[in-house]
Length: 459
Ligand code: ARG
Picture 1: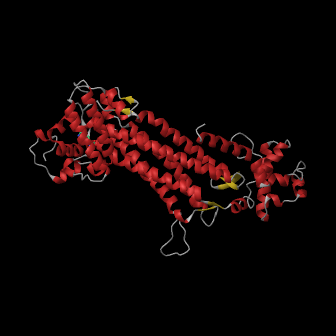
Picture 2: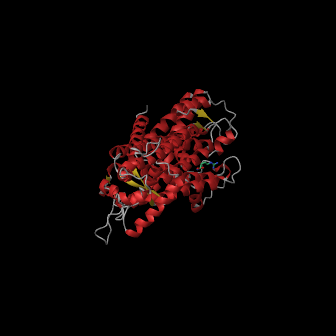
Picture 3: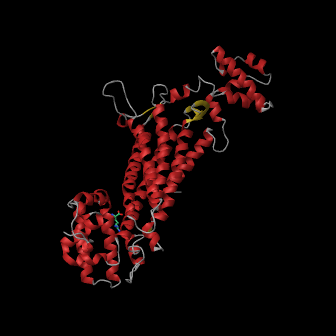
């Protein structure tokens, strides 16, 4: 069949050039949305009297058949028909004959493709929001089981101060809450309909865009036709939100990978999320966590790819826009899968509470406790810091820890130090006493958990 836009062309096509220009190999993912858009458009054409009722019914009948064939996996798309829009329209021609040609009245592929992508992302973002909420839920459950699990908190990857493991998990909960908010907020900009902008300038036909928007469930309509067909901000925003999300997941994965190493042994991932080695029989590798960390790269790449595609494009449509799709599909798939894997990993991981606690007992992460203790007795904090620093240095040369120093030696260092210091140096006490708002104290952590649960329950 000749090309649907072939009127002014000599009809001689080069298959390899067609293949370069075609998008059907990837934009067939938009088939469902494309048919929905066409159905809404044709109903509007009948509603406004632009085409007759019988013509409209024939087109609706044909599109409905194509919809069923799509669901049954019976459609075979072809490169000759370039993209999803021309493929579907060609199927329609084959099914109902020349009346199919009336579907494209007052429409262009430019507003059609933009509409398809708005519809697609609306669905994806809603799914992403649900998946993030499920991961947040898994984190809160693990946190609840680990309020009293003590672990070393780090700065510079050096033991800093002991914290509750739940507090650490809830830090990721907070990041993911912001991620979810960002996706939710972006919906208002995705939920806008370009259809009815036609090629770039609107149309001379008396269309009813409000009718089409209602049919398609859009809350808003683009008010400038040039903007409508040229805007890819909503995709960039999605890619940017996806990048931030992946950055968070990647940091978490990096920690999980460290934590299940022999050096840490803080957690164990279940077999489902691990793999073995083809040569070293003992290996249990955290492949899924590593892959999420690795896939973060392609999600960033998709953002930068599209930002670069867009930066020099004059208004309105340019074929460059066709490059907006693969990255969007890829990021959508990557983040939905990564979120599902992450939720499974967190929900099923085994926490080695004894090992975590132990690693806070053979270190100097209680040095701040001693300095705070002295400051509490009126010693200026800077001076207290100096005293404790010297003591740490002495302990290091003797191969002991602060809790091994005798009361006598403590009192020689400063007379204000009493026997209650030993309880203060205990990592459990150190965590418990951090009551400041947002701190790691058990009461604070419990409050965070309650607030998280209330938020997740939609209260
Ligand atoms: N396949 C095209 C794309 O994805 C559809 C729009 C084509 N419009 C045009 N004027 N050539 O961007």
